[in-house]
Image (cartoon, rainbow, N blue to C red; front, side, top):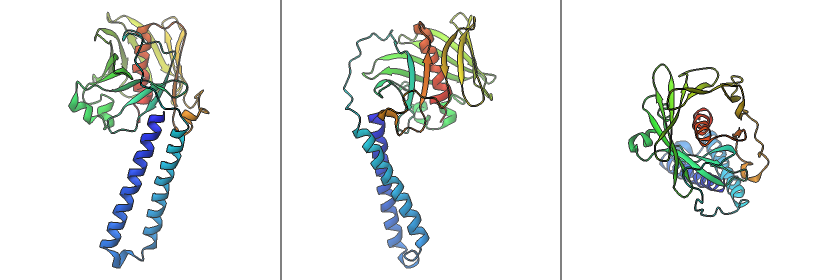
Length: 269
């Protein structure tokens, strides 16, 4: 989170300086007509105040957090030991999210794969990002660069499909979702096309439960409920996405649910 706050402060500062430079250039170029335009001066003044305030607030929040240490992953790429998912979006043109710890430490990143350079650059557009036009592949990577998983989102016209792979690109599972639906819902199949899970949002507001075929609750997302909201690492975040895992989930289930909830939540902005 320190990284995200610092980047937000940096871009807010760049935006404020850019607005100030453009404002001065316009005033100098059209000073005969604009010098007495007090409505313009007030509007620009408020804009600059907002940008400079954001710079200060986010930099102060970043200063409260410890410096993140460069980590070397001790677990192998075939391990994914998270007990919960806390998605946080980075400040970048190419969408990237982090899975962070309860104290805001970045554990994994999720971003469009570098193996698709053109589509990666087009991911700034929501329809591309959601796989509505072209299939798009995302990498789940540790903070020292080890690929843990890949998942591909594709529009099959009658339904959306998410295929999940491990670090060796072995197919683990497939999730099938409606292209458009008031409530999020999906079915999950294993590589042999046997149905293993079913899930549906509790309401149109976004609450989602994942159950196995026996009705056992495996993962839960509750819109607007975030257990770490008072921690300094999250104090300036307007939207926090927290997914609770049940005990004893398999490696395949965790990777599958990560892809699904990324599609439903972190990938919807």
